[in-house]
Image (cartoon, rainbow, N blue to C red; front, side):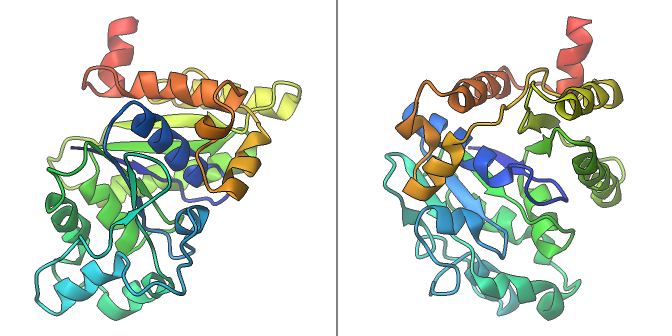
Length: 267
């Protein structure tokens, strides 16, 4: 089972769109795919028709189980979607209280590691949609994943969120631990604007070892897909956005090496 986290410490850069679109493409290829909503705002859960403030079972259950010293039970939390091969672990509003409730209590940083271990035979891919702030939820996502996807809107203010995200990785990286493989994904690229062109060039110059060398374009189809509660590939399979994410998925599915190693071989 492969686990990817989608994160950036800035909202509105395309995290949920990236998670949904990649998950939809994986599911269409026949991969058993699980989406995990770790953002208390629950945008990913709402996307598929589950209201975070009305759910009896969510990933909050896992943190409650650990706090109470009982076994994590993932099955009641997993929801099926209208997409074949695609399931969801939804968020709930209660997730916003975790940092206050749990603080730095021992073991709270590995809750999702334990939860996903219980379903490793059931799924081929897991994509975690992260909150935009550093806290127990972000720590859990980083601990559980083996690859970090960082969408960055191609405008200069969004790069500040990327800088904070990279500093967060440095903070949580344990001494002696191998760096977490990461891919910077330029999103909402509009080749008609100088702002997008300049921001993309700045990303390539600043992070050449991590950046995916293409872009995700602006595509109004993503709004239509969100309204329909389906990945865009099911509505407009030949749209610009789907073509771009398909290329990104091909890049991500290459043989398991870090992005740094891949870049070094190409140079």
